[in-house]
Length: 357
Ligand SMILES: *Cc1c(COP(=O)(O)O)cnc(C)c1O
Image (cartoon, rainbow, N blue to C red; front, side):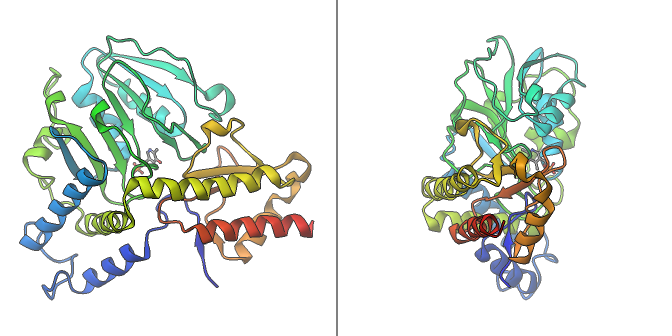
């Protein structure tokens, strides 16, 4: 039976990415060696790294004066690298969920004032705070564009007077971004880009070197820039996988094209959740609903049927639908690589379950 992979991360990747990576694991770029066993300094792998960085610039329209890096340690390491390199006196954070809270927690371990400008914790993070004020004397404003666990998303670059830092782990490359508004964008690869083990960083060169604290070598963005993301050994297979997804996305027409497809998939699924009497979205305001992670629960009258629906969906090939424990219910992660047909298959399963009950 065909599996429809709705996992939150690691998550679905394009067939193209999997096929090309499988080939390179056996014979990389005609070397007769595996991409797992060649030197990261070989000309073949350096070309992979260079092309991946170049394609990130091309697809996201990254302006001059920014560096693209592939690092390790996940978005979680960026939670502390960001303040280490950018927090001198004061920073502002928007708290929209588990990951945003973790970023805030790390920033608070440094010398400097860390403001939480707004939080949606009062409603278990089921909305995006509005009307908050970002003071204009902060070093940066940090936010999380897509809240993978709670199914909310900030769909457009916020309008603030200070440089921004954003965790885009789960919606990077799903839509265009105005990179010029950011000092730093970071994303773990395993949601929308490639296998786990690589972290994408886009950083504004001129914004670096302003903090007075000493920065350990491995945590200094400037070191990674100077060394073309090869200060230490990069994850060769993860970076190779990311490159394949970037090539796939370019071939498809880029972020403007995938944005339309993503919208279509999300609209289809939210429409069914809103129509079907057995289900409820966990995010009441449609404007705050994520295009990438669609969270929903059983309607109160059908609460006891949660397990039955989960089992029914599994029996039809749906994988990874269980919601995060802090929300419960279900979460359909419908990243770039998720085809419309799989979303339609889930919608059909929801309709069928309603008819049977
Ligand atoms: C998954 C995720 C993280 C954590 O990423 P790691 O690579 O595991 O550190 C951070 N932020 C967001 C928004 C995520 O979705």
